[in-house]
Image (tube, rainbow, N blue to C red; front, side, top):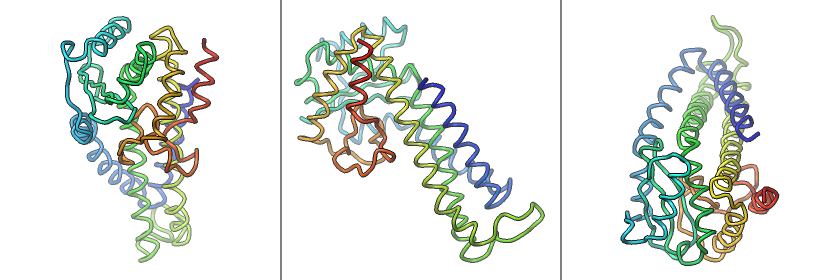
Length: 281
């Protein structure tokens, strides 16, 4: 169901991009914005793993350093038929974790010191199963595709605002009536909001899918459910210093205390995630 929802939302986002591109600059305007967004996100997709790991001061560890952590990852990747990712630790007492990398062969899993010290082995296994499911499902690639289309819509909306102000694209031309200056202005305000809502909905859908995948991989939904309860309490009591641009990577939203609305959240409600995991058990 989550995969169908993701596909449907991607289709809607693509349709929105085509509509906005036609409104603003016809086919040429849409292609220009898409190429600009594609270039920016291609760089992000290719180098984001190194950037985000450096951003949080993560250090690579080996089996000799942390045998339990490494052993669980090795066990789960063997069960899933995946390559062994590089494993990292983030030096903070906050509790959180994320996976990154452009594909299963170039992937990394990072957990915080606080998470390693607070969770039981089964809970840690649940968290790592969740993160490995993100890698297996190629969620980094999906989020990059979504960001590319959403970014192109943002660029087109900026073009539309300037067009509405200076009358550059309004009225009729050889490709028909695009709605005039007022129509452009309304579209420039509403389209980025719609794109953001769809982007956040896809992110939440991928979190549900990773929860289900992690529970199946470990064969213990309650391990992940227990971990999420601890992580939720820990995120409220001792939040990690995270940026908005990387919040979607973490297993629980590091910005939950600053979240204004569920629709604009990168993560589903933690209570609903736990409820679904317990139902699986």
